[in-house]
Length: 398
Image (cartoon, rainbow, N blue to C red):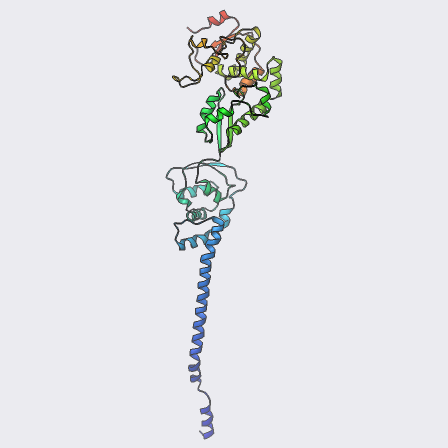
């Protein structure tokens, strides 16, 4: 090797030496890059840990305080991912159905049955929501009315209270006002029997029936029996309004025209129908019983009706009933305008609230020559009917 070649060789940088000098720079850059990525990921994770629960809370409400931070983030993410299964109904056109939660039933069992009944589409998502919200620990046993048209969130809320938003009031034919009032505490309505009786003591101003009821008279007779559904928070005036409107709808022009042809005002017809209602045990006999009373009224014969005396006597503490039975000879002497053994014609007003069949019986009575009837001796509740008093006496039971 000559001197010039050696010189050239010495002047060229050694490849191995070049790598040795650059390695520290490359390692440092890689470390910086990795650290940067870690910082970005950490920032993203922290952001997600904050934003995901915030978004979930906006959609599903506040999470249960029992959840730790990791559970909160985990469940929030899952709920957001399955949001449609929780915020959309299983079937917008689905029919209502009864659903019972038994005492001690597990949330898992309840969720499973909800899905089997088609009330929810995703039982697992629903179960996670219950845990997230803490509602899994507050599900109440009871009878519910649920619908696939409700969202799962609405169903979860409904299962916290078996008390329905609406209540049913059942009024039996032949009940007097006090009996209706006594039944109200079991319906779930929030007003008292006394408030109901006060509201029923006079017709509401402006109602069409107000003109048909004499001044100073109560609504006795005009609260048509049947089933009424109304919001739990309703007041007595709302219940009474429903019952009066039902009376108006059922007792139409045809019935009223029939009453008029018989010389009866609507108030008199309702009064007579209330007596027929209390006398009849078998509904099909109502037209016959109505004919007897109409025949007696036309002939000027006292009605001699036991239920009118029972009404006059009022509540019997010993029997715990408003309808004293049997009546004594002394009872039949009670000095009351409602006592049709002592007073001719109709009593001053209805003695009960008659059902539609009794109202129809007075409008369309049977055409009979009868003036008397008494209970048959066979225990069926039916009656025997007679034209003369002697025949009536001969039909007495041995």
